[in-house]
Length: 156
Image (tube, rainbow, N blue to C red):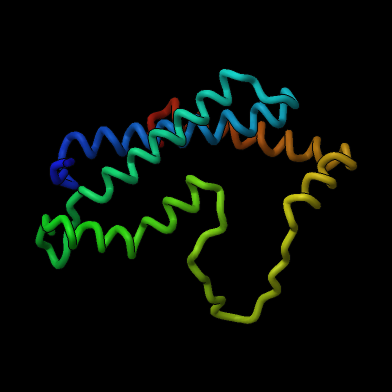
């Protein structure tokens, strides 16, 4: 049985830093493979699967990590599990499994909601070279900005 982990512990801080680094790697690796190589490499796939394993383990740790309620540390395992189950668990699972989120959003004013199914997006990307080139340019621009932020220490 896992012991209760304090949310302000060094272990938690290191876990959060590792998660941040892995998210940045994932955000760079997947689009890079898609945009510039047009194929998936084995090492890239292995890295992505290892990132998924890390976050799966993180879900387990989250069931045993304290939280604060009205300024007081909650350390009861049942309360921690219930709090996580009602809060972040649905989001964590949807991100890990690539499923739709289970949360809802409500617009404050009238708006049109446009949906582009993945299959149609892939077809457009395949059929229109200009669109594909624009995506590559956008990815390149954002990658440079992210790299500059990481190198300057702003992200860390």
